[in-house]
Length: 342
Image 1 (cartoon, rainbow, N blue to C red):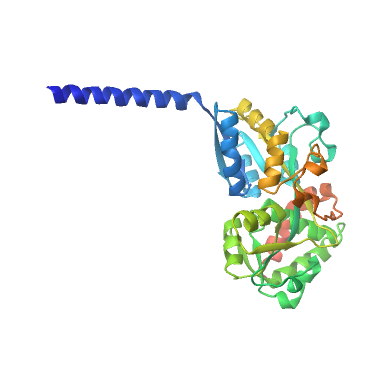
Image 2 (image 1 turned 135 degrees about the vertical axis):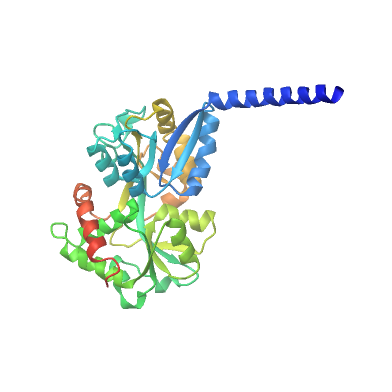
């Protein structure tokens, strides 16, 4: 009889603890975020946000920027995400055109550079992403690394280049479009020829960023085209043998944006995450620890991390409206007529 009473007491205690845990979990509201950010950035930001906003549980789904756009399109009638964290300007302009984004005027709107935000408050640029030449620093000495974009077409680099799957990656689609535009934006013919030359030297198209990093680290290839932030994270946080070259002729500098999904089920949670990402403290912490360049220049230059102060960036002259308009046409042609055919 005593054993029975003890078991009943344990069960009651267990149910009580479970009820408290369930109630505690129920008090949190899930904020669903689709992101193309590096996993290191996600793991850095998520606990900081949940500490600052304990009422929310951040659920982050990581995928390519183009995959995010396609997924949000498919979910338009029944949105599953609340917030889009990262993606190219071209992708966000397309999302805005297709009525996939919720207008929101954040608290910092008036001080924000006009060139890095949507005029109707559908998206704001969080960071600037210079696109550069990436290389394995164990395999290539600095003097053997291409210093200009055209150098990548040199026959000595045949089978040395590994490229992230272009069609699934907003970053790669934009880089390729910039290369086409740089050869003559009015007529893509010369740009297609340039990409054919690059394809000739490309050994493989990696399925995702992780696959790209593994192949470069193993020296299955030695070169790639990629964004500066992710290269620095891999080099300085993950201690991979990677380095980069910024071509003196100029680098595409992408605006990586954020926005709220139209019809978001947790609009208030999405707004809270929006504001959190743009607080000066978080922007500075991400610049220092996750190598982000804030699009909003409200932090004095001398307070920015030394690595940003030391950057010698020359922006490639790009008409981003043309890139946004032509991206689908140009990339479809590349995929059907150039990829793997040289």
